[in-house]
Structure formats: C-alpha cells, structure tokens
Image (cartoon, rainbow, N blue to C red; front, side):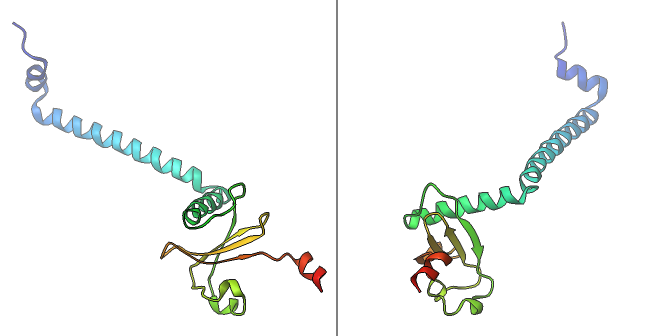
Length: 136
C-alpha cells in the first residue's frame, strides 16, 4: 500500500521544514500582491492632473446629491485657505478654511461646499470680466 502524500512529505522533509516553506511562500505571494497594489496607486498619483480631475469628479458627485449641478462639465476646484481674504464676496460670506469651491465655467456657476459637514454652503452665478465691463 501507498502512504498518503502528506505523510511521505512529512517523513522525508520533516513537519518543521514543510511549515517553514509554506510560510515563506505565503509571505512572498503577499509581498508581490502588496507591491502590485502600491505600484498601481503610484501610477495613478504620478500624474497630478489625473488626481485633480478625479477629485473634481468625486466632489461634483457629492454636491450633485445635495443640489443640481451641470452634468456635462467637470468643475475646477479651489480650496479656501484664508477666509479673511475673501471677505466682501457674497459667495464666501459664510466660508470656512477647508471649504471647496466648485467652479463651473461653461455653466457660469460657483458652489461653496463644506466637506466636513457634507453641506452646500452657498451657490452663485459667475460673472465674467467681459459681462461686468459691458454693463458699465
């Protein structure tokens, strides 16, 4: 009669060696999988324009849940870093540092969004320089 394969391996190599090799193989395959994951992340982050566009699309989706925004346009994103410099602008009357401004240039619309509260603070139409000077 033939002995089962596991018994043959255990007898020939010893249980400690088999366990050691299994652990090494598991660690190696885990390391390769982790390296592949982070390499893919690195490839995405390597191009800041791609990262910025992804952030803009993510923010637009969040804001779209709260109010209607243009669907055919990816907004330009700005972050409020010093609210004191923005005093006097109606859109920024209630702004806080860290708020995001979504600017839809084609639709001529701006939205002030607070990510920390997932809340639209203000929305306003954009006035272009040419239309402002034509009215004078």
